[in-house]
Image (cartoon, rainbow, N blue to C red; front, side, top):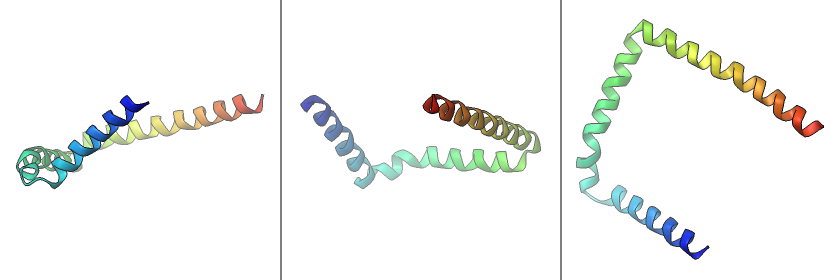
Length: 76
């Protein structure tokens, strides 16, 4: 239990250090710019949009099936 608390404290401490340090912006800036350009490319490409919508439709269909399966499981 103490080991888990120490690991949690280390992870949270290092995350806080990265977010509050001045070098974090320099570190994350290229990744943020790449993500922003990828998002713009997705918004402007109709093929990617249709595949994205198809993936969401499949996800919601399977989510509905899972909800029914879970409710049936707890009823029995």
